[in-house]
Length: 169
Image (tube, rainbow, N blue to C red; front, side):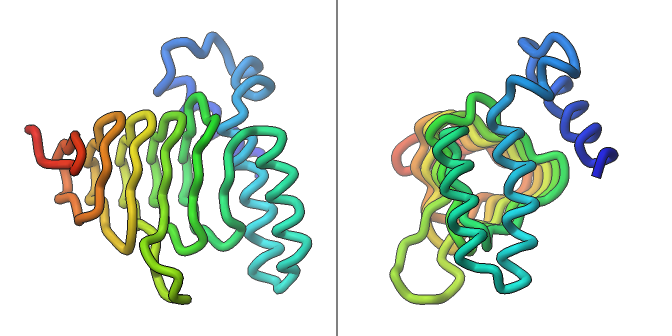
């Protein structure tokens, strides 16, 4: 567990030039606090302590401004910078080394009990207030521009921006 915390802190120090040291990141980064709490909540969810998981995730949302459904799958070294307003839906899958900014939504596009939230592959960067909807895949090392609305798959390494999002690189 301590090793994972160190990984996350190092990732944030690497990605955020405003971060001045490990203690600041440990104490003052609510996006990381939300991810760390999600690890506990996700374990509870998977062990069928569903109500407890939902209640704890609600408390974390209230404290951090980041809403992550307990069933969502989150990889290693995922960082959320200025996390206020981030929403990650139930069937979302997030790979390793993903970086998100405030206001990102990984939302569903149906009320059916199926895979209905995005899959974010390794190394993706998602800009502030981007909205990604539905069972789509954002390919490895892709970049989603701030304010974009994405409802279709994004190729690995591509940069997309706009409403609706289109490739810009």
